[in-house]
Image (cartoon, rainbow, N blue to C red; front, side, top):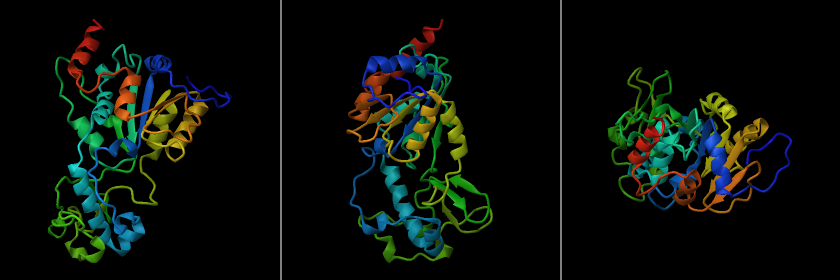
Length: 309
């Protein structure tokens, strides 16, 4: 149920039929995907004390060796993770001819997938979608916004250079970092001269993700997208934390609808019109009425095309 201005808070609905009616009328859809959808894809491992350290700009300035080793280990972990069927479905919704199927969101004009996660799961899911076939549209790569950047991004500390670097080791000094379990970067200091450097100006490079305490560079763009949306799907993110809480407030101000998908019962769903609890890979496609594991996406795409003839 959409939230109307001045309407008092009421208990969120779990009525799938009512939600599908809202979805079929939605014109501008935005998904806020939190870290919850990545937990099943990430390799398991023990958490060491150094992994709990905050990688701030100050920490990088004082100890670039520690921060680079920390992110090198995270890069290796990200490389081992594989997208789930949920990541694939979220990516598939960026294909207009799939999303606009009569049973999903036939009136939708735009779709944006915004995530605070820095892993490669959603980008990989987008990249793995089938290329143009039978007149079917390609996925919109610009539909995905990683608010805090990607784990493989690098940037210069002196000039404007930044790029995604998929090379596993980056430099000889980092080649063995994280290869063996139990690696503790706090016990090894790599000279600055041996750390990654900018290919444009030669200055020290740093991880391109947003470090703790930094302002995400695309917040203004995200704010514009959310303010224009009439339907917000919150998947794996908490409404008790920012930025989800802020964006939900924007939706409430405009009378838009918010649907929350939670793996387990949530304590704060204020502002949500719908709340669906359970395993993401079950409740999300069920609520959308979308094909999922074991169903050929291409057949649905063709059906969608034929329905317009």
